[in-house]
Image (cartoon, rainbow, N blue to C red; front, side):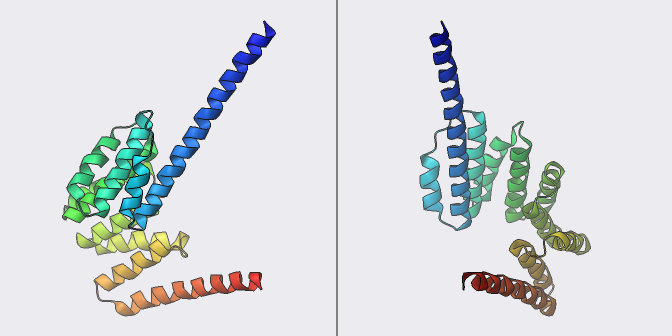
Length: 207
């Protein structure tokens, strides 16, 4: 009897192990796909995406998000909206936040500023620390003529993310929009100094 119990427990343990390994493998692939999309390697992203095994609704939601990101990247915002809306119907807060962000970026691409602002704000309600969402909101507000609120968001971001390339480029872009090139260059110069210091520290450690 004991040997059967041990076999039973062993099977259960192996089952949980295989589930954990699958989850890690799936999430790692999703991360790889996002990296390829950010590099504009759409063919490679689709290749990895095509190799994924979808076993549940959570997996499908992640795949829908990725397709939304791909269509947005190739400038097909309406098609991207279709996939973001599919992923939106979820019980996962992070997925819902990313769906709202994707919808915001898609509507921004279409010039539908009010819709873009609404979705960005909803995304922040679900994930208030998302840098990409705050930058998207600030860009949309700027285009909508709400430049003071946009600058407030960017300055707040800068205080806690001074070394972020996304934040520095967003602030420089904001100033360039209003032809304040001197301030834009000043922001980029400070960031370049930071990068040089990091490079020098890295080189000194390797000497």
